[in-house]
Structures are given as structure tokens and as C-alpha cells.
Image (cartoon, rainbow, N blue to C red; front, side):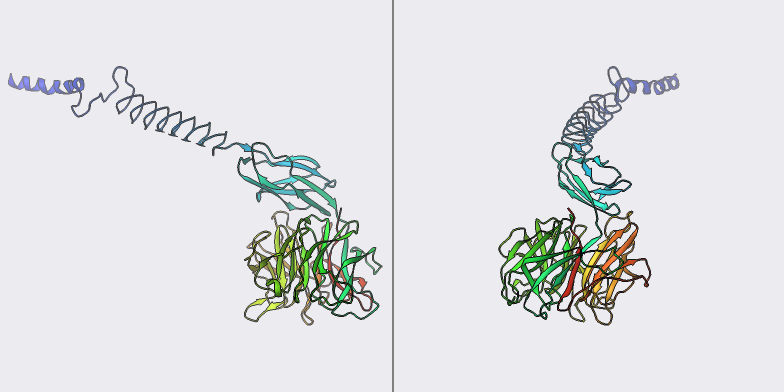
Length: 503
């Protein structure tokens, strides 16, 4: 009997525990009346103290204290404090802000041509027709946008207006792009009238226009006599031209001095020529001891960067706004002796012929990042480009092209070098690693100015020596035919060359 009672107690004990509960747990372990949880003391939760949560203290959250969130304190969010977002405090996005589109209107694009745009360096958009356009990827409110051209249409020059800014509370619809057809004309600076030997004194300047597709020597289609600006008649480093990034102007520098006068203490000036051949001086700089202003570049005529040989300004590159009458801002401390400055694809570049054997500055350099306007910038030679060694031992003018439409940015470089024994026009191509490597090109001999443009699928190169304006096709060989477009008359000389301005 004792054995039977003991056996009966053994069998009834688990039922008693289920009915009375574990003394260490205040609530039922298994669901009871009105309870639907696995563990805890309240609500319909897996763990926690309230709400329909997996862990936490309130709301329909996985973790947190309120709202229908996974983690956080409010709203229908996964994490955050409000809005219908996954994280953040407002809007209809995953990051707490509202997205807006970026676009504008394209005009002037030729039939059958393609223009490629980028926004913030990506989201490439190919346009084949004029009219409104919109980038595919929206931009969040408060973030910036920056629309640039990744590939120009063949034979055309397109420019962007209102291209950058910050998204506010509406779509951006005013990033307009205008395209014009290139004329194949180039302009060259001639110094001297031919009525007296060139000297180091202030000498008259003329801008001559030529059709670069001509196959024979012929007179210029236009000659503009420049009033209010002269340059030294014998300084081969002065008188270089560049066309503005928007194509509307050709700019260059010189002296506010009458012909035959000493230029050492003259005011320096920057001049601008437009497509109607109207010339104006746009900047007056203070006189200095022996500073020579050699070249100028601009985006759209609203500000200018110019290069020279330092001295009193204590730098070889300066920045100055349009219409300035005072001292410019020096932006580059070394080298101080520079030659040709140029803006290409939103970046600033310069050549120099100075430096020592151990620290040469005889190449093409980038200056800072983008278009710097403050002091303390650094000149950096382009990756793998020769520096003070053949073929670049005395570089002057240079010009970039973007030949590879699949890769945004400049990828082809032409450099003029006037070294008597090893000079010429040299071509460099950027490879997939970003290094510049020399490529085959016909060499017209020592040169100082160079420009290039696409003629259909062919690149035409135009170069100046002291006495000639030459052109040839870059056909990938070293034997292309060289055409002499013009020969400078006695007691005159050619200096820089640039693409002609367009309306």
C-alpha cells in the first residue's frame, strides 16, 4: 500500500506543478486565459513589458518605446522619431527626407547627334532631341546637384547654365543646356605691324581668324586690331590665347601701354574678344616691377585665372573677378614662373619651363582641385607625364579632348614644346589606371601654341611656331600631311592659338 501511495504521488506531482506554477515565475509560462505571449508580464509580446512588440515597452515595434516601428520612438518607421520613413524625421524616403528630380531644357542639339550629361558625377543621361529632360535618379532635399557634360555631340559645343545648387522643396527644372555648331575656325595672336623690327617694348597686337580645314595657305578671314592692350614684341612667353569654357570669348593678357613704351611698370590688363570680334579690356591690374602676364583663362567671363613670372605678386597664377581694378588673389606658390594656364572640364592646369634638374617644373600640372580661388594651392604633374625629360623639356600651349564617350573626362592631351632639338607637338592618352602615355602623332617641329578639335570622327590639330600657323590630322601615324595655313610677315610673329569664339 505504501508503494502504491508513493507511485500515485509521483504521477500526480507534474499536474500540481502545472496548476500552481513555478514559484520562481510570477506569471503563467504557457498561454492561459487572456494571454498570448511566450514570456513576460504584459501585452502580446515575445519579450518585454507592453504593446505588440518583440522586445520593448510599447507600440507595435520590434524594439523601442512607441509607434509602429521596428526600433525608435514614433511614426511608422523602422528607426527614428516620426514620418513614414525607415529612418529620420520626415518625408517619404528611407533617409528621412523628400526626393526631388533634377532637369531642365536642351536646345540647339543637331539632328542625329547625342549629348551626354552627368549629375553629381553619375546618373548619366543621353539626350538625342531638344526639349525638356529629367535625370532618372532623384536627389534628396538638402543635398546638392551638379550637372556636367560627359560627352559633347560631334561638331558641337554645349554649355550648362544653372548647373549646380542645393535641392530645396521642389523639383529643379532650370538646368538649361544650349548647343551651338563649331565653325572650324581658329584665332591666332599676331604681334607687330611689320613696319619695324620687334623689340622688348610694348608692341601692337592683332587677332587673325583662319579656317582650320583649309588645305592651302590663304589670307585670314578677319583681322581684329586690339586697342588698349599691347605685349612685348620679343617675349615668346607672352600672347597666349584660350577660349572660355562656354565658348563665347577668347581671352588674353597684356599691358595698358602705348606702342614703343616700356612695359616694366605698366598696368597689366586682361582682354576679351567675342564672336562679333568686339574687344574690351575687362580687368585692370596694378603695375609691378617686371611681372609679365602671359596667358589667361575663364569659364564664362565672370572671373579669370592668369599666369606669369611671379615677382612682386609672389606667385605665377592669380585669380581675379570680372571688372576688378585692384590686386588679384595669388593661388599658387610654386612654381612662380608659369607659361600657359587653361581650364578644361572644370579643372585648372598650367605649364612651366622652370625648376632644377632635381625639382623640375617642365610639364603639364593640375592646380589644386577644380577651379581654386584661394591661396595655398599645389601644382601636381599629371600622372606619368614626362617632367623635364624628353619629349617635354620646354612645354608651352596644351589642349585636352574627351575622345572616349564611355569614360567621362579628358582622356587625350596635346602639348606644344619649343625645344629646338627635341620639341614639337606631342600626344598623350590616359589609360584605364589614370596614367598618361605618349601616343603616335605627326611632329611639325618645335611649337608653342596648340589646339585641337573633332572634325566628324577625326581630330584636327592646329599649332603655331614663331613664324607659321600649321594644321594636320591626327590619324594615329607620324606621317600625316602638314598644311601651312599662314606665315607671319617680316617683323611680326605668331604666339598663341585658340578655337574661335562662338555666339
